[in-house]
Amino acid sequence: MDDRLVEQRLRAALAARADQVAPEDLRPAQVPGTHTERGTAPRQRALIAIAVPVVLATVFLFGVGAWALRARSAPQGQAELATEPATPPLTVRVTAQTGTVSGTAAALTYPVPHASGGSAGVAQRVDTLFSDRVDSLVTAYRTQAANESLAQSSGYTLEITTGAVETWGRYLSVRLDEVADYGGVTPDNTSTALVVDTDSGTTVVAADLFTNVDAVDRQMRAALSQAIGSMVDTAELAQLSMRPGKDGSTTPLAWYPAADGLHWVVDRCAVAPCPLDQPAAVLPWSQLSTLTRPGTGP
Image 1 (cartoon, helix red, strand yellow):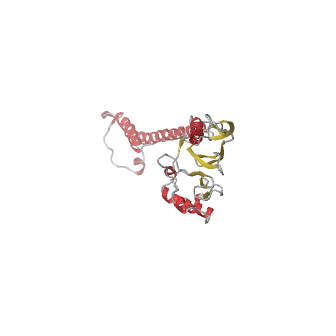
Image 2 (image 1 turned 135 degrees about the vertical axis):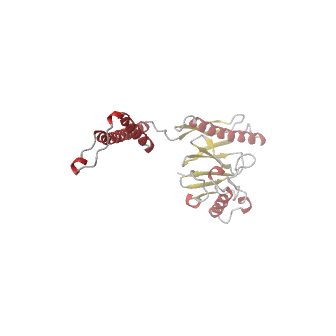
Image 3 (image 1 turned 45 degrees about the horizontal axis):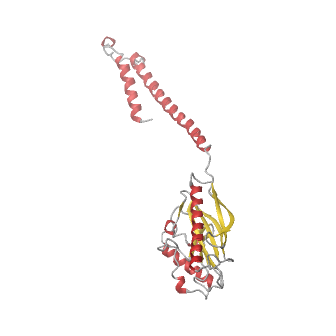
């Protein structure tokens, strides 16, 4: 209880008691006498002496009562919060579908997402982002097939599969691997990654995760060069970056965060001879700890 409030209550109690004493109750002071006579206190003084402890006791009990009320209400509030249902984590299940690329005779295999959990509306937004990315890949294949006069030719295929579904902190990453057959010696092997903030259901760019994207790029290029070896095309490698280009993509690079570190996957033929599979590298988070933004990791 506030000390000022205690003082105010003491003053009020003493003033009330003083008002009970009238002039006629007063009498001349006695001449000091023996020890026995001095030991007999006036009635008024005794009443005042009793009033002070009573006021203090009342104030103390009021303070204890208020504290006890707060102490009782706190566990109840905590219990109510504990009973609120926790938001389930966002998860994505993928099923494969088959069909034909519209406007062509090419056979199509593509993934269909089924997101669930997460905050309200997030799962639907993730499904939409995922489906839009798949649609863009199919549209690009159809455009390329038309340019090469293959639209009505049979025997060509487009296969889009889910190469990885990874989580890191509140981020969900989905890598889509595409094998597009246009009748060449080898089919085109490309990848694209979708990185989503599961709190908002929005896409994430590298600057959202890292304080210095250029520094991370340099470390990842070094790791990729080591993974490829002497056959790496250093000039093409130097162009790789997680910063989006004018078209908003990072092609031929696909990058995404996962539990074991930051992943890079590069399109076939982009930085190494075509007979090699898609070059890839992963750098553990321990080597990127000074470059990640606070609150982005697990």
